[in-house]
Amino acid sequence: MVATPHVALTVVGDEDSAKRRQILDGARSVFMDLGFDGGSMGEIARAAGVSKGTLYVYFADKCRLFEAIVEQEVLEQGKLAFNFDLSRDAETTLKEFGTAYIQLLCRPGGGSSTRTVMAIAERMPEVGQRFYNNVVALTIGRLATYLEARVTAGELVTDDCQLAASQFMMSCQASLFMPFIFQAAPAPSSAEIARVVNSATRMFLAAYRVRQD
Image 1: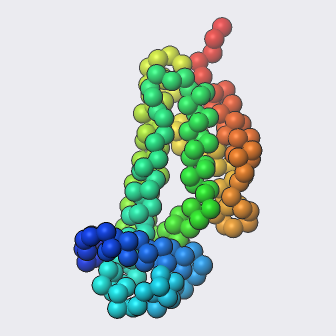
Image 2 (image 1 turned 120 degrees about the horizontal axis):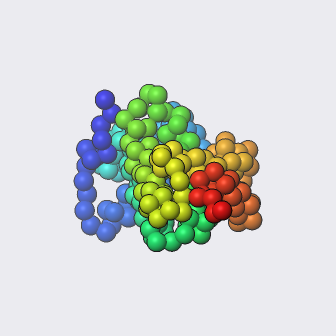
Image 3 (image 1 turned 90 degrees about the horizontal axis):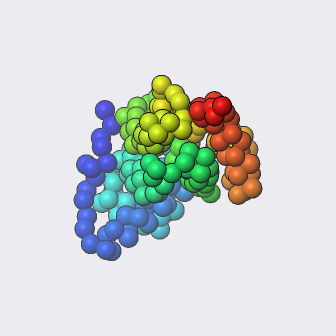
């Protein structure tokens, strides 16, 4: 059983918070470059510009440090305010959401947490499950709730809004996220994102928008 990030020593004060962020930034850089297994606590301390003693004051081991990074990613993604005003039309909302979603997913450095979680999820399933539930599934659920409102309003028709939400999000990733996360391509440009999201929106509405005879 992997301990939760809450077991790490709690420190208070602005200086301690800044030091913790400094350590997390250094650890994220090491994990991005070397992976979870390749990055040692010594390398993390060097990257963060702190002593190993200081590092262990904040985090008891590498697993707890990585979990703190995942927790931070969850919080950062939770701050993003997608506009799911239930009264807005589907086409406008889907295009805006799809664009913001891919910009978040494919931001420079943004794939590192996902990539690293995927690499260690089999060995640390609690981390993978928490990341999925608090990042991926939460966003699917928010979009599904919006789609349910548009079904009620008579704009869309589907008996499975969760599936429809997942389908739209995966369509927005097409040709963008996989090359990015495997470092086969840089973060996509605004024009590339717009092209893919617009196509995903057209396909989604062709399948789910109520036909007007």
